[in-house]
Image (cartoon, rainbow, N blue to C red; front, side):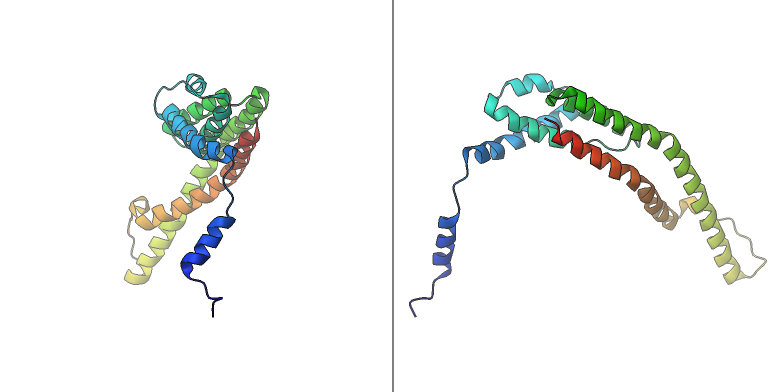
Length: 196
């Protein structure tokens, strides 16, 4: 009967098995979030990353830069509008300041810019064609439904672009079109984070 342990005893045994965190782990836990905050400030306001990084000791700086780089890379997105383009530019500027291997960073940025260029050029044409095709399909479906309800002679003009179902379908189609770009972009963002 003495083999039965209380929940408290079991918890205490488990706590004793957990090792104390290393100094590196403590530094990472403390300074990665500071880097994340720094990156947010860089994106939102005019914050000099180099000066801000200089405020940290050498052993802390690595973790601050790591946290900042993760946030900056995460904020690189498809150039859907002017705000996204501005955000991309600021994120890429910040990453270039944080990384030591500037040549490798610029090589990845070149690939990212190619994605952006394609997205804005041929991608825009694909999206316009897909939009018009979806609109025509939707108009045909609506016309068919009207004719089924009111008879074959019925003609009704319905602005499908005002229909919530149309917008929902368009969001799905657009997400599918964007997914190929996002897949490559995410790959390049991972490459950026692996650069020292």
